[in-house]
Length: 235
Ligand code: ADP
View 1: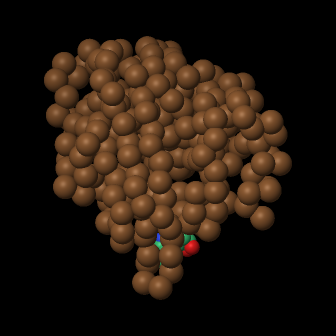
View 2 (view 1 turned 45 degrees about the vertical axis):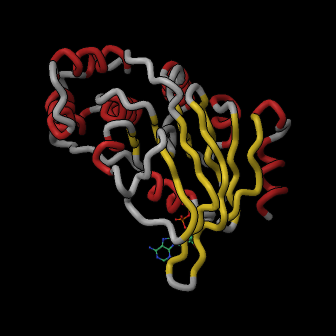
């Protein structure tokens, strides 16, 4: 896989208001490659709003985001090539066959050598035995693998994974967790989850939002009990 050099995301004094409603207030953080960062907070804390601003989908009210030195608003298409996104609930096309779906996504990204790339990604996420099936015929765990295959197909430097293990059994969760870990090298992975044991197992660092503010930015190793920590900071 390609090695990305010094990829970073710099968020400075970032705020977003929806009318009078303040969704995000004065966020400051920097993400570097090689990290899996847990992006946590109670519902309504401002996580989706922040992610949407990172993807260039909505405009900040104040402050800035630079991804690899570029403004997502101005570089939306170029930056989309750098970002892989697995949305909450992993929306897929259930009627499509796995390879057909990945070819559809690869064509959107205008990838060259697409058949070869699809084969590589299928092997990487462990879908070889299921790749001949329709998506709707797969178990939830394998559907998540299709979602991850979709997110990494264009080899992005940044992966944003929104609740990638929700609805999976413990074995499937462990498998997806290993898969995400294997993608860590040279990438920035932003991982949003309400399953705190999951975050403890996988993340190097935790950003915790509460009522639109960043209430903690800590290395995972400094947090003894994430559940207790989460409660203390957000209640
Ligand atoms: P989270 O992803 O952490 O659950 P959100 O970013 O979705 O939080 O929401 C943060 C706050 O902004 C909430 O109070 C929510 O109601 C509000 N909000 C989000 N989107 C909109 C919108 N399009 N219009 C008005 N308010 C919004």
